Image (spheres, protein in one colour):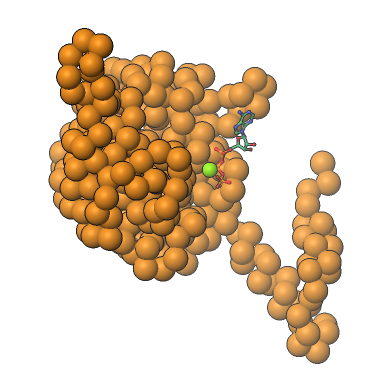
Length: 284
Ligand SMILES: Nc1ncnc2c1ncn2[C@@H]1O[C@H](COP(=O)(O)OP(=O)(O)OP(=O)(O)O)[C@@H](O)[C@H]1O
Ligand SMILES: [Mg+2]
């Protein structure tokens, strides 16, 4: 196996007195898709923010390509080849495709006071890169990003990260708001990035999507790394169960079954389910 591109050792993060991440140690290798799984509030977005320089960890260390690194800002992380695409692509709806692709790194033409944004170049490159990802409906770089579909926006953001040389591409729920076809397309783009040797960190709630593209899986439960395994080492059921925080789903099923036995096969209504759940809550 190749050397890790990114290695975290005992990374913790607290917001004031609230500890959100506890001693996370993880390695990510080139050409691998790491799926970061976990229930709402498990700490996935927080881990991503720490990885991409939006927040500094409270303790723990990072290595990039075997060398110690600290990120004070997203720009720092970017200079180490780490790019993060936020949900909905993090693009600007009122900007043109070309300008959005080059935001922060605008190509210019002319000199001195005549220097200005090279709209034609930006539009052409953006359209070329997006089309290379298989989005052939995009033909005009002057169109507004707001007119793109969710999947097209993800393609724009991923294409941009790859164009600017990302080695580690972090995607926070890139398929969450997408239909089946668009999600499949985004997953295909992830596989394309992987083939280029890029390490992809994919945050998702969708076990099907994770299993379709993942090589490596990490499950967070309440800020702790509860499982770290490779493709084929766990079944879909085991992964789903882990994501639900262990026995939660099995417990719920057992409760519903017990209710049905007592109520001639009837399903409990939501209010009753809530009461069942309250019974389960620890009293301390
Ligand atoms: N700035 C903050 N200050 C205090 N607590 C925070 C802050 N940001 C996140 N948290 C808390 O940290 C925990 C983890 O949040 P995080 O957003 O990382 O979860 P997540 O796994 O991404 O959840 P989701 O699947 O819902 O996106 C939550 O309990 C949240 O309330
Ligand atoms: Mg999140």
